[in-house]
Length: 346
Image 1 (spheres, rainbow, N blue to C red):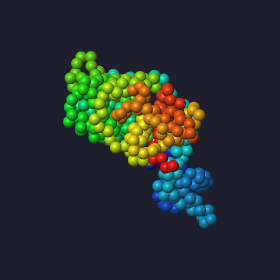
Image 2: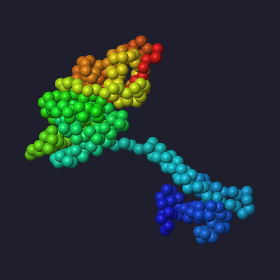
Image 3: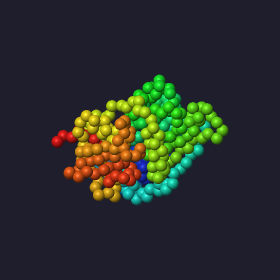
Image 4: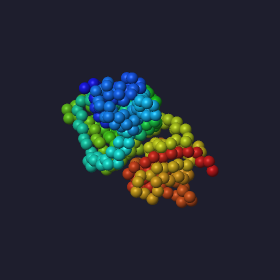
């Protein structure tokens, strides 16, 4: 079978439909008799085939002429027609799809230093929303290229760096939104998009490999995410802020919640702002819009939280104050997926 015919059949055409379309395509325009002669298909059957091809956007049939002329649709338009059919099919299949995500996290044990760095680079390159990283400064320095690519994509990056290598800290700060340092050499915790975390003996990443050192790559369940996040923010609270980048200009739209808190905190110091939060399903509203009355956070100094892991926006909505937290919020009135921050206009 012609390889082109074979490939067309993979997109739903029958062998004879594919052969008929190619016969017309090669001639630009042909009569039914000419198509039958070229394909060795009976004239009566050719009529059925070209009618089917016309319905799918591959040919145009001009039956006002005698004999009937069949004209090929250009390949770009024909492919577009197939793409539309596939898109419709995808939509129908998606409606029937039952997602079977894990109820428990998957764990990968990594003992080789190079493998762990490769895993970190891959995860950083796949980040969509946020990266929270606690590592020795030289480790972050080695990851500046993927971190820079992530920041260029709009990913929010917070770094807690251990050690006293100030030159490395300054260099690494160029690829982060906010950086803190902590003099004791820290162990390594990396959280990405609230979905994947990496924990490791820092000696493994520094190349000071000891027997028994290993890293864990953990695909997080919500409970695991909360526990690891709490641990990270407790360490973060002990650090000293050494750099913070300028926030996104306003309006800043559809930010991850903690990125939204960062942007709101920066701008609220200079102007009145309002936010719109997109809430998780199952709450009283789909979205809320209000002026920012207060922010409870520890991403930036000075901290205003009641406890280290807290990131809360207090909004004035129609004269009533409500509190909004991010994914997994447990003390706030609402839990939000994304935040849009804009300057208050009233």
